Length: 182
Image (tube, rainbow, N blue to C red; front, side):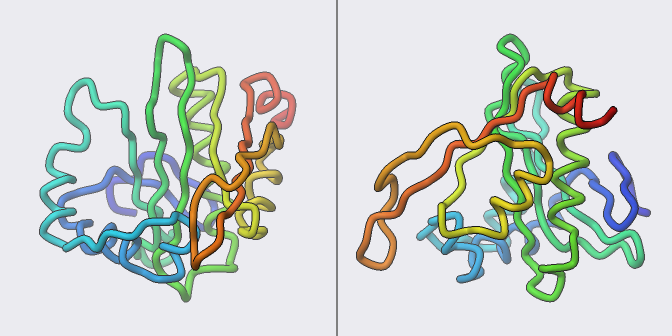
C-alpha cells in the first residue's frame, strides 16, 4: 500500500497527490460519471494537478482521497468530504469510481463505509449528507447500505438531456452510524 490513510479489505484511501490529476480529470471528463454528477465543463490533467497542490491547505473544508485497490495499489476513484464544518460537526459526502472496470465490484460501497468511519470516528462529525440523482439506483443502494436515510426530495433540481431531474437528500447521523457498528 502506498501512503494509506484508511484501510479496508479490498480498497484503501490515501491522500491525493498532484500526480492524481489524471485520475481527477478522468472522473470529471468521463461521460458515465458526468451524467450522475451533472458536470458540463471539461477539465485538463494540468488544471487538476494545480488544484491538488493546494487541496490540503490549512483551513480547507474539502478532504478528498484516492480510492486504491489493495491488490495492486491502482487508484480507481475519488471520495471526499466537502464543506467540512467542525463547529456544526457536519459535511457533505461524495464517491466516484473513474475506472469503468472497477464498477460493480463493491469498491464504492467499501469506500463509503471507510469514509463514514473516518467522518464519525476520526473527525467526530455528527452529520454527513449528500444529494443523489433519483435515477442513480446503484448509488442509492450503496448509501442506504451504509445507513443513510432518505430525508427529502429536490424536485426538478437539475436539467439533463432536455428534462429536469429530481435529487434525493440523504443523511446519516452519528448515533445511527454507531448503532450500526454494534
